[in-house]
Structure formats: structure tokens, C-alpha cells
Amino acid sequence: MRCRFLSEWIRQAEQDAPKPMQGFAGFLRQDLDAVTACRTLSWSSGVVEGHVNRVKTLKRAMYGRASCEPLRTRILTQPSMPCSCKRAAAWRSLVTIT
Image (spheres, one colour):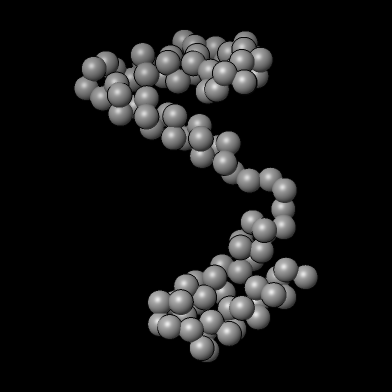
């Protein structure tokens, strides 16, 4: 049902809207499957993006200070969030640091 309304909005925007809105509507049409999935599915990649952001922040903080091994150790042993301490402990028990 929502997809029908979105398709109708895209069609109207491509015909009647100002040029920037027409461009935006065109990009939505090109990736309509992903936009529809984003609106209808219950899962997201937010957790993964959060972990990627954490790793990049650690990498920037340690740039030029140490070799790759301390960075690897810090990434693998530091829990990502306080609420995930049980999962982090389980993860650490599975990962062996050489």
C-alpha cells in the first residue's frame, strides 16, 4: 500500500516539482526496491554501521601511536556498548587473539 503512494508521489514530483525535487524523485525511482525495503522490513544495518563507526574512531585515535597489533587487540576486546556486555563477553570467548 505504501509503495503505491510512494510511486504516485515520485511520478507527480518528476512531472510537476521544481528541478531539485525532480532529481530527488528520479534517484528514489532508480533505487525504489531499496527504499521500499527500508520502509517495510523490520531490520536495519544500524548496528553494523555503529560498529564500523566505533572501529574508525579507534583507528583515528591510534593513528601514528602504535602498530596494528594493539589496535586489533583494542577493537576485539573492547565492548561496543554497555548494554551488550554479555554479547561482548561471549564474543571474546570465541575470538582468540594471537
